[in-house]
Length: 352
Image: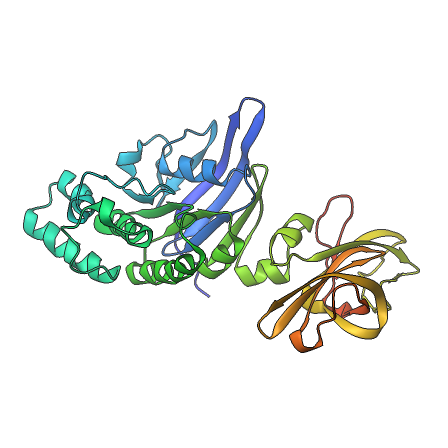
C-alpha cells in the first residue's frame, strides 16, 4: 500500500506556561487531504497545539514542517492557512459578500474573480442569494457557514478549526457536522479540528489525536481507538458511555470476573490487572456479576443500564424491551473474548 504524502509534520513540539507543560514533545505527521481531530479534556493542550500550528503561539522547542519546508518562525499571515474560530470572528459591520471576499481582496483579486468565487462558495455552503445581507441579520448556523466559506475563499494550505460547532444547538450541530465533512472532502483540504466532543470527532475524523496533560496518548482511526485503546485513559475517554474498568485479581493464570473466561497473555503472573469491557460486552444472564440497577437510559431500540456491583459501577447496553427497572437486582455476564487488559501501574494496554 502506498504511503500517504506527509503534508504537516510536527516534531518534538514543547510549550510551557510557567511550571505547566502545555505540550511535551508532541510528534505528529498529518497526510495531505487528511481530516484530523485533536481531542481531549479541557487543559490537555489541544488548543495550544492548534495555535502553534496557526502561528499565534510560539513553541519553546520543536519544529513545524509544511511539505518539508520549515514554517516554525513564519507569522500567521505567511502560512496561508484558513481558520474558523469558536467565536467565528466575522466582521459585524460587513455584508456576507464583504466577509467572504475580504481575504481575496487583500491578495489583489479583481471584482469579477471575487464575485465568481463568492457565488461558488455560497452554493457550496447552501446559502445562495444572501451575498448582500448583513452578517448581524444571520442565524447561528448561517454565520457558521459564512465563516467556513470565508476561510476557504482563498484555497488554504491547511484548514484549522477551533471548536467550530460548540455554540450551535444539538440539531443544528449534527447537520453542520455532516456538511463540514462533505465540504472538506469536496475541496480535499488538509484539516485539523479542535473539539472536546468525542461524538463529533468520531464522526468527522480520518484520525483522532487523543491528548492528556500536553502529551499525545494515541493517534489512530476512530475504530482503532474504540477497539484497541492504547491505555486506560483512552479506554475511559473514548466511547459514550465510557468503557467499564474493573480492578481484578489474576490467580493461577486466570481472572475471576463474573464467571467469564478471559484469556490472559502467556506467562501472566498472579496480581492485580485492570479489565476493560465496553457496554455491549456485558449481557443480562442467569450467572455472572450481581448488580443493582441505578439508572436506565432508553435510546431507541437499545437501553443503557447503569448498575452498582462489588467490582464498581457498570453500564451495559441491552435490548430496550428487556431493560430492567430502576432498583432491580440483575446479573451481568461479561464476554471474555471482548475484554481489554491494562497494566495497573502504567495504565498501558496488555496484548493478549
